[in-house]
Image (cartoon, rainbow, N blue to C red; front, side, top):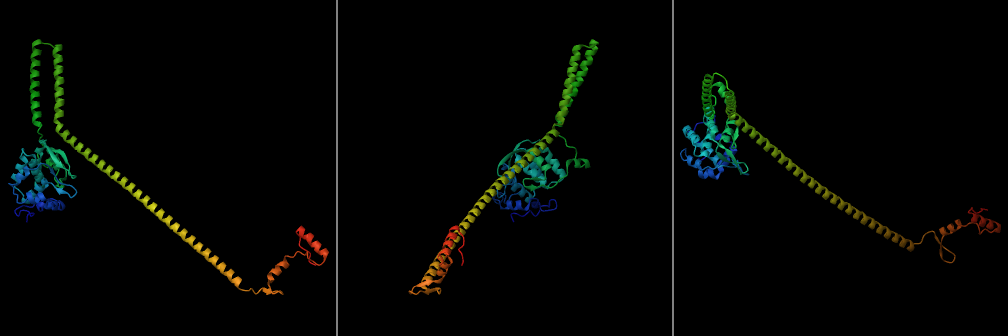
Length: 386
């Protein structure tokens, strides 16, 4: 019930007035403590007291995007929809600057194009300072005329999308609005009148002197030239002052563009530094991961080496045991080639054959052949076979 729009309220731009605030921001406002405690049961008369207590303006701030009291009061005005006369009185209030900004912001959301230009353009002459809370919770210095210029020239302010309005020159061309009259034009007109009077007096004095002396004097010529130069300088100053308002507005727009470009450069630098830091951290993590993989491979290689060593050691032990077993079996069994000799001992026939094969013929029965075989053996020749 506390968050519903007044039943008597009219639709603004074809929708519920509260729908002019985005849904996410609207839900943040409904959950805010200031909305629940200070804005409950407010009317158009009691809302003025809360507006007089404001000390800053802004949208949402902080990590959880908390709304400011200024934004809560704007939402309350959309909910109760005060009359146009009350909003105009808010704008004309010169004692409380935040009350004036609150009324101007509400009129920018709900007013027609002609009302917006009619009631907000005179506030360009208000140069009082304002405190604005930024999205990070810090405060920045701004002025009333800067806030009004933001409301008239941009489509987004205080985290709220502003309704689109036509450009002023379009309305002037169609005859809906008159040409804007600067507050400095009155001063310019006074200066023009004074210059015209001074010029007329100079003309009268020169005419009187010329008729009196009936000639030209070098002194009067120098004075006349000096006055003419002073007049030219005054004309030049007048032209410069007449264009001051337009140049001042353009200069402020250029300053804002430079500030936005500087902020975008800082944001790009911040992102680049964050990416470089992230790349360094990723590179360190890859190095650590490679080191861990290298250590794991070395451990696996060491394990494989130890397993291969243990297998080869086991294989050598088995071979040694098998050899000992064979030798024991060989000693415990009689080879079929071993035949018993005449004296009862066993003699290996293979050894006999080897001995026979190794005979070099020196034991031949014939002495001459034996001597020849010995000589051939000394020469490395094969023995005679006779």
